[in-house]
Image (tube, rainbow, N blue to C red; front, side, top):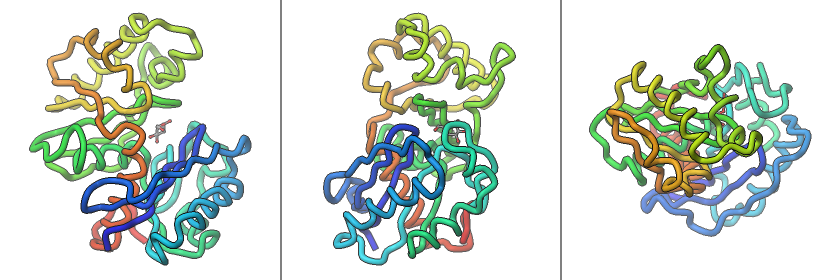
Length: 259
Ligand code: BGC
């Protein structure tokens, strides 16, 4: 099965496209629907249903991969920082399978982006320890060693200066506080130096919409570890969701998020 629908749930938009997993490309253009103001399970599931309906001719009854901005532990969401709190504690896989009437695989959004970059993007085929970070509403992180994902790393929430790191260094904070790239890069420097000390990675990949402006802040970072921008940009979540769904089909007993 090589065409699988990927859906990427973010704080501002819910995006989906059928993914050709041989090429690592969208098979047809994506759709984007704004995330409902009240991002409850019911409202978000209704948007997902709309996206599935849009692409039903391409993906038939195939399972769907869905990213979420939260850890996913055996289909359950233990906590969530940037969507409605009704999601916290929910058996989200069962809830969504029931609402959407098909098999789904849920995966953390940064894990999906990391999988996509390692399969098809900036870290393609990397032989060592890759730490993917997504800078957006929050900070998402993924740890991938020799192509294998260690799921649910929540390193956006490490403590920095006594506070949650993502509340100081996410790109949404740059916008909210009106920081220049230079001011923001100082915070990123502290953040990435801490990750470097904790994990000794071989490579950092920086994703999220702001990676488009890499030239403005990337060269300001001084690390021992190589650090590069993501290449799949806004395609990474959708492609990674489809990779996770395919993995669940092929290895039903081997997943961190089994059904
Ligand atoms: C969440 C992570 C997520 C990241 C990016 C954080 O607040 O805890 O699970 O990957 O935001 O969306």
